[in-house]
Image 1: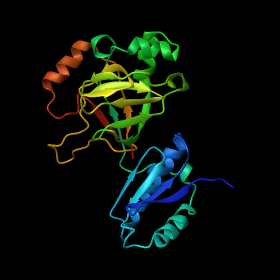
Image 2: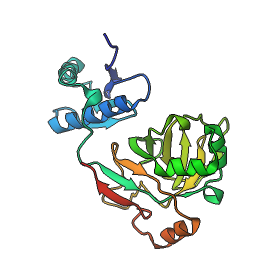
Image 3: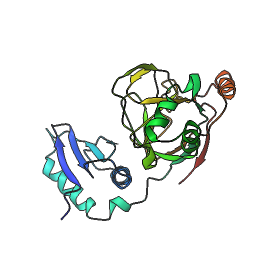
Image 4: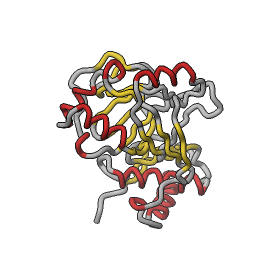
Length: 245
């Protein structure tokens, strides 16, 4: 009998459904699909839901609502289907975000390529052709963790922190890509630069990406990135979008 998924209370703030001990495509798919189903059913007493890499969280006031009642409903829902093979949520988009790789815009590209065992040109080709999924949002407002890249890019974080990467920086580690929403220190390697802003507090939709969206980072020349920066007012950074489902 499998040990997963597991249902646990989180203090008095809610209930966590975890689908695996570590990140995998199937566990992330399960978390996203399960959250969408809970949202669709509009459960009374569940005020909010969210996902991490492999978990779905239900915000419930457990000082008022008996946890056994919610847990029983969760067990019934979990038994309804194979969540690890479930369809991803409807309404997803594919975003193609132009990216300048290497040089001043990606000062750690060569270091990342060496860690991956490929040359810089191969690194740019593989990363710019990859198609990854927004696995979760976190760390900073709206910051997307996306993956999974090929096993080639299962490279570790740095031992030391980079003091700061700029907003829109594309970084890589452990088969994932992140576009930074704010200037920030990081232990991930800075390989490219975008003009994309996912966190837009002035907008009616302050976070553009949703977990389950897919991303590509096609390579452009540094001059093209500067042109996009000069013209872009939306925060999309020249990105093209396509509805997937």
